[in-house]
Length: 387
Image (cartoon, rainbow, N blue to C red; front, side, top):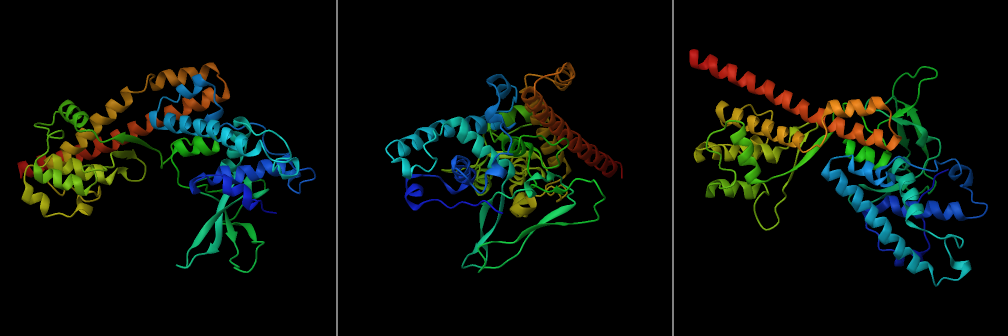
C-alpha cells in the first residue's frame, strides 16, 4: 500500500509548484484522500497526528526563540508560501462544480495545507521512479504506512529495499534488517545525513551532538578584518585584497557578478573548503607560493599548512574569532538555556531552546578543534625554531 502523486491533468496545469515543493504536491493528494468518502487510505490517514512539532506551527515567540537567522528565514519563507498558496488554491477551486471539486467541497486553508505538507515532509520517502535515458532514476515521493513509523538513527539497524522492476507499477518495497535486531528493539532508519535545521524544519526534532550540524555565515571582508584583528593577526587585507588575490577569490565564487557568499562551519568538513582557501590566500603575502598549489589543495583541511605554519595558524585563529562573534549573536548563553529547560516549558519552546543550544555547542566544538590544531602547529613551529 503506497500513496504516490497522481492528479487530474486539469488540476496540475493550474498549480505552479516547483519540483522542490514535492512535499506540498503529495500533501495535496493526502488532503484529497482525507476528504474522499470511503477512501482506501482513510485507516492510515485517520491515524496520522493531528498536529506536528515543526516550526511553522510554533507560536511567534517560540519562532523568535530559535535565535538563528538562517532557520528563521526558512520558517518565514514556508509560512509566506502557505499563505500565498492558500489564495492560489482558493482561486482555482472557487468556480468549480461540486463534482469536479478535488477536495469534496471542503475548504483548503493555510492550516490544512501546513498539516498536509508537514505530514509528508516528516513521513514520506523519496524512492526510485522511472529510469531516465542516462540510466539514473527520478525520485518519486511516497507515503509508506508502517514503514514510516521507523525512527531515525545515524547508525540504523534497518534499511529500505526497493525492487527494481520497470514494468511493475506496484513497486515492491520492504524493510530489511541491516544487522541483528533483538526482540523489542525499535526499527531504525537513517533519514539522511542532515543538519538540525532540516531535521527541525521537516521532522520536528533536534539531534543532540549531530555530527552533520553546521552554521551558515556570510563571507564579508569587513567582518573578517575585524575577526582577524581580534585574533591578533597582523595586516589583515580581507576587505582590500590584492589583484592576484581577487583573481583567486573570483575562482572561488566570492567575487564576480553573481558571487556565492554563503559559507559554513561545522559538520564533517569542519570548515567550508572555499572559505578555508580564501582565508589562506588572503593571509598570504607571496603570490608565487600560492600559485604553486591548486584550489583543491588550498580548500582541503587535510592538506597540512600548504602555505606555511604561520599562515595556517592565522587562518585558524581568524575562524575561531568568527566563532566567538557568532556566539555573541545569540541573545542567550548556554547556561541560561539550560536553566530555562529545567524550569519546564512547552514542547515548542523546548524544541527552540534545544535547537539554539545545540548550535552553540557545535560552534564551541569547532573552536576546540581549531584551537587544538593551532596548538599543534605552534608546538611544531617552536620545535623547528629550536632545532
